[in-house]
Image 1 (cartoon, helix red, strand yellow):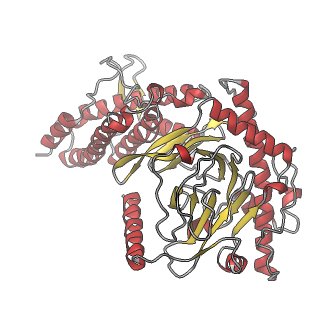
Image 2 (cartoon, helix red, strand yellow):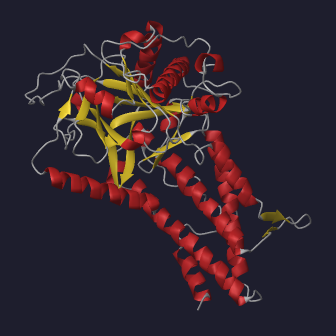
Length: 510
């Protein structure tokens, strides 16, 4: 409900802003404009830009080869996302790479990390090349972590000692080159003159646990939206805040546009201010019509950092050029509800209410208390709709890189089957007349709410799997509606369609 309310609020703000603008367009500046640096310092100082020649050449080569390898192995996919109750393909193709067992959710879609090589984890990659590509992205991750720590330290100096301009890196200034050979930044490297608490805060806000890789060839796109507020031209990614991040964490983006590739001549009218052949990142103050926007060109190997609360106070978009482009967007994802460790813990909590008779081996519920019933059935829904259906809706795409997720998903499916049995046991218990009526009715009312939501979501996911958009996907990418469901009545006693079950429960209340 909160998410839907937030979406409605954003739509209202967008509509109001466009109404205020009418046929007019807001001003924006590029580095070629005289007032660019002053605007950057005063309104966009938490955006840090690094030119490609500040990054070690060896790292460029590793990462760019990694991009091309993943592209060659067809590891990039357009996501079928859900916006305002409708499914849309993203213009950009993506793959999520990061810590084993982590996920990242955006636009009602949960992506599952292709795990990068991690000590203590047995990861079977489909080819040595994919292993090397993932390893290269760890190296990039470590480099950007060090740069983000240094940039945040610069911001702290700016705030406490009022040293001017330390937060701004203009086109003539360079970042110092950092070594990434040791894997990640050490305390000695990053915490000089920084108190212990501040060091921990710096580390937490820059320790990227995953990267969302993007790829797009604009010339292969039939249609791209025009930027609506400033007239900046065609957008690859519309205005947005990045979702589901640790509060005030830094986002780091490395850009690799395939410059020098064949570009067709177009009759497209050039937007004033920016070269439409070159990729740009656009920034604006969120829901503001007073402050000019920024459009900053992104050349091969450039990177930028969005520090502190910039992602919350500002919005950004990606403006398409003519050449194909890759990017690696490193994030400190909020994984409080998005890791295997978390969801396994939730399942084990739910199954604490299931007991086995030592003699007959029959199953029963330990407690029928309303709070316990509610928690168990909500976990049941969470496993089915936030994990199993999200994973299988994406078809067999992850097998392009690794089979790592198959074992944990099988374990989740087993947990889910046990919770289905618990739902059947609960139905049996609430049907018994010897229960105190008031207590039984309270349990039934609670149970009905969760089951009604389950039925609604099952119908929605089934419709999504059978939609025209889903059917248009290649065979190995087509959604699998519920492969974790079986026809074995002994192991799966509840009907998939819960309408009759819900109707029977409602009758018990009368």
